[in-house]
Image 1 (cartoon, rainbow, N blue to C red):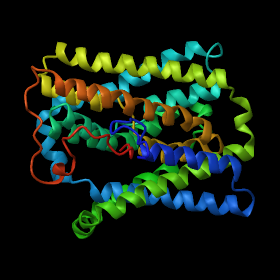
Image 2 (image 1 turned 180 degrees about the vertical axis):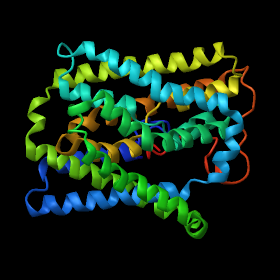
Image 3 (image 1 turned 30 degrees about the horizontal axis):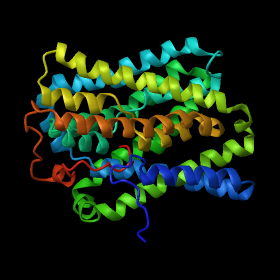
Length: 350
Protein backbone atom coordinates (compact mmCIF):
# COMPACT_ATOMS: atom_id res chain seq x y z
CA UNK A 1 0.00 0.00 0.00
CA UNK A 2 1.40 3.36 -1.02
CA UNK A 3 2.00 5.90 1.73
CA UNK A 4 -0.08 9.05 1.19
CA UNK A 5 1.86 12.14 0.20
CA UNK A 6 1.22 15.79 0.56
CA UNK A 7 0.17 17.40 -2.73
CA UNK A 8 3.04 18.78 -4.81
CA UNK A 9 1.53 22.23 -4.45
CA UNK A 10 0.98 22.00 -0.69
CA UNK A 11 1.65 25.61 0.36
CA UNK A 12 3.15 25.14 3.84
CA UNK A 13 6.87 25.66 3.47
CA UNK A 14 9.22 23.23 5.30
CA UNK A 15 11.24 26.13 6.64
CA UNK A 16 8.15 27.58 8.28
CA UNK A 17 7.65 24.19 9.94
CA UNK A 18 11.24 24.44 11.20
CA UNK A 19 10.49 27.90 12.59
CA UNK A 20 7.39 26.60 14.36
CA UNK A 21 9.38 23.67 15.77
CA UNK A 22 11.98 26.13 17.07
CA UNK A 23 9.24 28.14 18.78
CA UNK A 24 7.93 24.91 20.32
CA UNK A 25 11.41 24.02 21.56
CA UNK A 26 11.80 27.46 23.14
CA UNK A 27 8.41 27.05 24.85
CA UNK A 28 9.31 23.61 26.27
CA UNK A 29 13.04 24.12 26.92
CA UNK A 30 13.76 27.86 27.11
CA UNK A 31 17.32 29.00 27.70
CA UNK A 32 17.66 30.27 31.28
CA UNK A 33 20.49 31.58 33.41
CA UNK A 34 23.95 30.93 31.92
CA UNK A 35 22.35 29.16 28.95
CA UNK A 36 20.37 32.32 28.18
CA UNK A 37 23.59 34.35 28.22
CA UNK A 38 25.20 31.91 25.78
CA UNK A 39 22.10 31.89 23.53
CA UNK A 40 21.97 35.70 23.53
CA UNK A 41 25.66 35.96 22.59
CA UNK A 42 25.28 33.34 19.86
CA UNK A 43 22.21 35.18 18.53
CA UNK A 44 24.16 38.46 18.38
CA UNK A 45 26.96 36.76 16.46
CA UNK A 46 24.43 35.10 14.13
CA UNK A 47 22.83 38.47 13.31
CA UNK A 48 26.22 39.97 12.49
CA UNK A 49 27.07 36.96 10.30
CA UNK A 50 23.77 37.24 8.43
CA UNK A 51 24.31 40.87 7.51
CA UNK A 52 27.94 40.25 6.59
CA UNK A 53 26.77 37.58 4.14
CA UNK A 54 24.06 39.91 2.80
CA UNK A 55 26.71 42.52 2.05
CA UNK A 56 29.17 40.03 0.57
CA UNK A 57 26.59 38.54 -1.80
CA UNK A 58 24.93 41.74 -3.06
CA UNK A 59 26.40 42.61 -6.42
CA UNK A 60 26.90 46.38 -6.59
CA UNK A 61 27.12 46.20 -10.39
CA UNK A 62 23.75 44.43 -10.70
CA UNK A 63 22.16 46.98 -8.39
CA UNK A 64 23.53 49.90 -10.41
CA UNK A 65 22.38 48.28 -13.68
CA UNK A 66 18.88 48.01 -12.27
CA UNK A 67 18.67 51.74 -11.60
CA UNK A 68 17.58 52.21 -15.20
CA UNK A 69 14.08 51.13 -14.16
CA UNK A 70 13.91 53.73 -11.42
CA UNK A 71 10.14 54.35 -11.63
CA UNK A 72 9.40 50.72 -10.80
CA UNK A 73 11.88 50.66 -7.91
CA UNK A 74 10.53 53.89 -6.44
CA UNK A 75 7.02 52.43 -6.65
CA UNK A 76 8.06 49.31 -4.73
CA UNK A 77 9.92 51.38 -2.13
CA UNK A 78 6.88 53.62 -1.69
CA UNK A 79 4.65 50.58 -1.14
CA UNK A 80 7.11 49.07 1.33
CA UNK A 81 8.12 52.10 3.40
CA UNK A 82 5.21 54.55 2.91
CA UNK A 83 1.94 52.73 2.21
CA UNK A 84 2.58 49.75 4.49
CA UNK A 85 3.50 51.99 7.49
CA UNK A 86 0.45 54.18 6.80
CA UNK A 87 -1.82 51.14 6.98
CA UNK A 88 -0.02 50.01 10.11
CA UNK A 89 -0.66 53.36 11.77
CA UNK A 90 -4.32 53.17 10.75
CA UNK A 91 -4.57 49.80 12.51
CA UNK A 92 -3.94 51.63 15.80
CA UNK A 93 -7.72 52.10 15.91
CA UNK A 94 -8.05 48.34 16.53
CA UNK A 95 -6.41 48.63 19.99
CA UNK A 96 -7.70 47.41 22.42
CA UNK A 97 -10.88 46.01 20.85
CA UNK A 98 -9.16 43.51 18.53
CA UNK A 99 -5.44 43.75 19.26
CA UNK A 100 -3.45 44.19 22.44
CA UNK A 101 -0.79 46.89 22.48
CA UNK A 102 2.13 44.38 22.21
CA UNK A 103 0.49 42.62 19.24
CA UNK A 104 -0.15 45.96 17.58
CA UNK A 105 3.50 46.93 18.08
CA UNK A 106 4.46 43.72 16.28
CA UNK A 107 1.97 44.46 13.50
CA UNK A 108 3.36 47.96 13.05
CA UNK A 109 6.92 46.59 13.04
CA UNK A 110 5.85 44.14 10.33
CA UNK A 111 4.78 47.12 8.21
CA UNK A 112 8.25 48.67 8.55
CA UNK A 113 10.26 45.62 7.42
CA UNK A 114 11.78 45.56 3.89
CA UNK A 115 10.48 43.40 1.08
CA UNK A 116 11.68 39.92 0.23
CA UNK A 117 14.13 39.08 -2.54
CA UNK A 118 14.07 35.35 -3.24
CA UNK A 119 10.34 34.67 -2.99
CA UNK A 120 9.56 37.85 -4.97
CA UNK A 121 11.85 36.64 -7.75
CA UNK A 122 10.41 33.13 -7.73
CA UNK A 123 6.77 34.27 -7.81
CA UNK A 124 7.50 36.85 -10.51
CA UNK A 125 9.18 34.14 -12.56
CA UNK A 126 6.25 31.74 -12.12
CA UNK A 127 3.81 34.48 -13.21
CA UNK A 128 6.02 35.40 -16.21
CA UNK A 129 6.72 38.90 -14.99
CA UNK A 130 9.80 41.13 -15.15
CA UNK A 131 12.29 39.00 -13.23
CA UNK A 132 15.33 41.34 -13.43
CA UNK A 133 13.17 44.17 -12.08
CA UNK A 134 12.02 41.96 -9.19
CA UNK A 135 15.64 41.16 -8.35
CA UNK A 136 16.68 44.81 -8.26
CA UNK A 137 13.54 45.97 -6.46
CA UNK A 138 13.94 43.37 -3.72
CA UNK A 139 17.64 44.12 -3.37
CA UNK A 140 17.05 47.88 -3.14
CA UNK A 141 14.33 47.32 -0.54
CA UNK A 142 16.61 45.14 1.59
CA UNK A 143 19.43 47.65 1.33
CA UNK A 144 17.18 50.60 2.21
CA UNK A 145 15.61 48.65 5.06
CA UNK A 146 18.92 48.41 6.93
CA UNK A 147 18.63 52.16 7.57
CA UNK A 148 14.91 52.90 7.13
CA UNK A 149 13.42 50.12 9.28
CA UNK A 150 15.26 51.07 12.51
CA UNK A 151 14.68 54.79 11.90
CA UNK A 152 10.97 54.28 11.23
CA UNK A 153 10.70 52.00 14.27
CA UNK A 154 12.29 54.69 16.42
CA UNK A 155 9.94 57.36 15.06
CA UNK A 156 6.69 55.37 15.07
CA UNK A 157 7.14 52.92 17.93
CA UNK A 158 9.14 55.14 20.26
CA UNK A 159 9.42 53.68 23.74
CA UNK A 160 7.28 50.68 22.72
CA UNK A 161 10.05 49.49 20.44
CA UNK A 162 12.11 48.12 23.29
CA UNK A 163 13.20 51.56 24.42
CA UNK A 164 14.65 52.89 21.16
CA UNK A 165 17.52 55.21 22.09
CA UNK A 166 21.05 56.22 21.16
CA UNK A 167 22.17 52.90 22.63
CA UNK A 168 19.74 51.02 20.39
CA UNK A 169 20.98 52.96 17.37
CA UNK A 170 24.57 52.07 18.25
CA UNK A 171 23.60 48.37 18.50
CA UNK A 172 22.01 48.58 15.06
CA UNK A 173 25.12 50.15 13.58
CA UNK A 174 27.43 47.58 15.17
CA UNK A 175 25.30 44.46 14.58
CA UNK A 176 23.73 45.29 11.21
CA UNK A 177 25.34 48.14 9.29
CA UNK A 178 29.04 47.51 9.99
CA UNK A 179 28.91 43.77 9.09
CA UNK A 180 26.99 44.65 5.91
CA UNK A 181 29.57 47.28 4.88
CA UNK A 182 32.41 44.88 5.72
CA UNK A 183 30.80 42.27 3.47
CA UNK A 184 30.60 44.80 0.63
CA UNK A 185 34.26 45.79 1.10
CA UNK A 186 35.44 42.17 1.11
CA UNK A 187 33.20 41.12 -1.79
CA UNK A 188 36.04 41.27 -4.42
CA UNK A 189 37.86 38.57 -2.42
CA UNK A 190 34.91 36.61 -0.98
CA UNK A 191 32.38 36.83 -3.83
CA UNK A 192 33.69 33.84 -5.76
CA UNK A 193 33.94 31.67 -2.65
CA UNK A 194 30.37 32.50 -1.61
CA UNK A 195 29.02 31.91 -5.12
CA UNK A 196 30.54 28.42 -5.21
CA UNK A 197 28.99 27.54 -1.86
CA UNK A 198 25.49 28.92 -2.17
CA UNK A 199 23.80 25.77 -0.92
CA UNK A 200 25.93 25.50 2.22
CA UNK A 201 25.55 29.20 2.97
CA UNK A 202 21.80 28.84 2.57
CA UNK A 203 21.84 26.45 5.51
CA UNK A 204 24.02 28.91 7.44
CA UNK A 205 21.46 31.67 6.77
CA UNK A 206 18.53 29.59 7.90
CA UNK A 207 20.32 28.09 10.85
CA UNK A 208 21.29 31.57 12.03
CA UNK A 209 17.69 32.74 11.83
CA UNK A 210 16.49 29.67 13.76
CA UNK A 211 19.02 30.54 16.47
CA UNK A 212 17.72 34.12 16.60
CA UNK A 213 14.14 32.82 16.89
CA UNK A 214 15.08 30.41 19.69
CA UNK A 215 16.87 33.12 21.69
CA UNK A 216 14.01 35.62 21.21
CA UNK A 217 11.25 33.20 22.15
CA UNK A 218 13.24 31.81 25.08
CA UNK A 219 13.55 35.32 26.46
CA UNK A 220 9.81 35.81 25.96
CA UNK A 221 8.95 32.59 27.79
CA UNK A 222 11.30 33.47 30.64
CA UNK A 223 9.68 36.91 30.92
CA UNK A 224 6.17 35.43 30.83
CA UNK A 225 5.01 37.46 27.86
CA UNK A 226 3.00 34.58 26.38
CA UNK A 227 0.53 34.68 29.24
CA UNK A 228 -0.77 37.91 27.70
CA UNK A 229 -1.80 36.30 24.39
CA UNK A 230 -5.11 34.43 24.00
CA UNK A 231 -6.42 32.37 21.08
CA UNK A 232 -9.15 34.94 20.23
CA UNK A 233 -6.46 37.63 20.02
CA UNK A 234 -4.38 35.45 17.70
CA UNK A 235 -7.44 34.86 15.51
CA UNK A 236 -8.10 38.60 15.38
CA UNK A 237 -4.45 39.23 14.46
CA UNK A 238 -4.62 36.75 11.57
CA UNK A 239 -7.83 38.37 10.29
CA UNK A 240 -6.25 41.84 10.40
CA UNK A 241 -3.19 40.55 8.55
CA UNK A 242 -5.37 38.89 5.89
CA UNK A 243 -7.05 42.25 5.24
CA UNK A 244 -3.66 44.00 5.16
CA UNK A 245 -2.28 41.53 2.59
CA UNK A 246 -5.42 41.76 0.45
CA UNK A 247 -5.25 45.56 0.41
CA UNK A 248 -1.58 45.57 -0.60
CA UNK A 249 -2.13 43.02 -3.37
CA UNK A 250 -4.99 45.08 -4.78
CA UNK A 251 -3.19 48.42 -4.52
CA UNK A 252 0.05 47.14 -6.09
CA UNK A 253 -1.81 45.53 -9.00
CA UNK A 254 -4.36 48.19 -9.88
CA UNK A 255 -2.29 51.14 -8.69
CA UNK A 256 0.64 50.15 -10.92
CA UNK A 257 -1.79 49.95 -13.85
CA UNK A 258 -2.91 53.52 -13.17
CA UNK A 259 0.74 54.57 -13.16
CA UNK A 260 1.14 53.22 -16.69
CA UNK A 261 3.23 50.10 -16.07
CA UNK A 262 2.98 47.12 -18.41
CA UNK A 263 1.80 43.70 -17.29
CA UNK A 264 5.27 42.24 -16.68
CA UNK A 265 6.23 45.23 -14.52
CA UNK A 266 2.91 45.11 -12.66
CA UNK A 267 3.61 41.51 -11.71
CA UNK A 268 7.03 42.44 -10.34
CA UNK A 269 5.56 45.39 -8.42
CA UNK A 270 2.77 43.27 -6.96
CA UNK A 271 5.03 40.52 -5.65
CA UNK A 272 7.87 42.78 -4.48
CA UNK A 273 5.63 45.50 -3.05
CA UNK A 274 3.18 43.36 -1.09
CA UNK A 275 5.51 41.09 0.89
CA UNK A 276 7.74 41.38 3.93
CA UNK A 277 11.08 39.75 4.68
CA UNK A 278 11.22 37.35 7.59
CA UNK A 279 14.99 36.96 7.30
CA UNK A 280 15.58 40.71 7.58
CA UNK A 281 12.87 41.34 10.15
CA UNK A 282 13.82 38.72 12.74
CA UNK A 283 17.39 39.96 13.37
CA UNK A 284 16.22 43.58 13.46
CA UNK A 285 13.49 42.73 15.98
CA UNK A 286 15.98 40.99 18.25
CA UNK A 287 18.03 44.21 18.32
CA UNK A 288 15.12 46.64 18.62
CA UNK A 289 12.79 44.84 21.05
CA UNK A 290 15.05 42.83 23.33
CA UNK A 291 13.03 40.60 25.67
CA UNK A 292 9.80 41.63 23.89
CA UNK A 293 11.05 40.33 20.54
CA UNK A 294 9.05 37.10 20.72
CA UNK A 295 5.72 38.97 20.61
CA UNK A 296 7.09 41.52 18.17
CA UNK A 297 8.01 38.90 15.56
CA UNK A 298 4.83 36.82 15.91
CA UNK A 299 2.81 39.01 13.47
CA UNK A 300 5.71 38.90 10.99
CA UNK A 301 5.95 35.09 11.16
CA UNK A 302 2.19 34.71 10.59
CA UNK A 303 2.16 37.25 7.76
CA UNK A 304 5.16 35.62 6.11
CA UNK A 305 3.45 32.24 5.83
CA UNK A 306 0.18 33.86 4.74
CA UNK A 307 1.88 35.82 1.95
CA UNK A 308 3.63 32.71 0.66
CA UNK A 309 0.40 30.69 0.52
CA UNK A 310 -1.62 33.45 -1.16
CA UNK A 311 1.09 34.50 -3.61
CA UNK A 312 1.77 30.89 -4.64
CA UNK A 313 -1.85 30.61 -5.78
CA UNK A 314 -1.86 34.09 -7.32
CA UNK A 315 1.36 33.48 -9.29
CA UNK A 316 -0.10 30.33 -10.87
CA UNK A 317 -3.26 32.23 -11.81
CA UNK A 318 -1.18 34.96 -13.44
CA UNK A 319 0.82 32.35 -15.38
CA UNK A 320 -2.37 30.66 -16.61
CA UNK A 321 -3.85 33.92 -17.89
CA UNK A 322 -4.12 33.54 -21.69
CA UNK A 323 -3.04 37.13 -22.38
CA UNK A 324 0.13 36.87 -20.28
CA UNK A 325 3.17 37.62 -22.46
CA UNK A 326 6.17 35.37 -22.07
CA UNK A 327 8.29 38.23 -20.73
CA UNK A 328 9.74 36.57 -17.68
CA UNK A 329 12.50 34.54 -19.26
CA UNK A 330 15.42 34.31 -16.93
CA UNK A 331 18.65 35.91 -18.11
CA UNK A 332 22.01 34.30 -17.79
CA UNK A 333 23.95 34.74 -14.57
CA UNK A 334 22.86 34.90 -10.95
CA UNK A 335 19.17 35.28 -11.80
CA UNK A 336 19.03 31.87 -13.46
CA UNK A 337 19.12 30.07 -10.13
CA UNK A 338 15.39 30.77 -9.71
CA UNK A 339 13.29 28.10 -11.37
CA UNK A 340 10.39 29.29 -13.56
CA UNK A 341 8.41 26.17 -12.70
CA UNK A 342 5.50 26.65 -10.27
CA UNK A 343 7.35 25.46 -7.21
CA UNK A 344 6.96 26.99 -3.79
CA UNK A 345 9.98 29.21 -3.07
CA UNK A 346 12.19 28.82 -0.05
CA UNK A 347 10.92 30.75 2.90
CA UNK A 348 14.20 32.45 3.57
CA UNK A 349 12.35 35.65 2.99
CA UNK A 350 15.08 37.96 1.89
